[in-house]
Image (cartoon, rainbow, N blue to C red):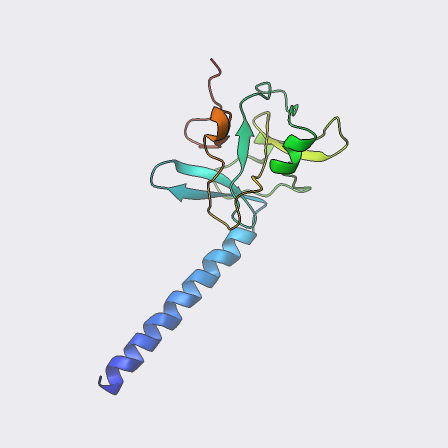
Length: 147
């Protein structure tokens, strides 16, 4: 392979890595951000890119969690002391409350937010549809309609 081709490939790789670093830095810039999935559309993630979920057994709009004890070990509550969001979101849609077990938790439009302990890396959505009760927060179709 000619040396010019090797240099071109190396420059392309460096450019791609720099772009990924900027994207990762921007992700950490906010306590809540968006990720996109071909099937699920745009959904909420935390500052490190882990998916945020809501629990369909929580009462809509009141910010009160019904997931405690063993449930909260599998579905740890998400909490961000200071909410910062990307353009297009309102920080007023996010509230913080102290749960009955004394743990702080952030809610979106009154729905407590959780992460899933089986999501091991950013971008995973292993909790989507879990027991037909746990779902990602798709920002286009939220809040959900309860049956």
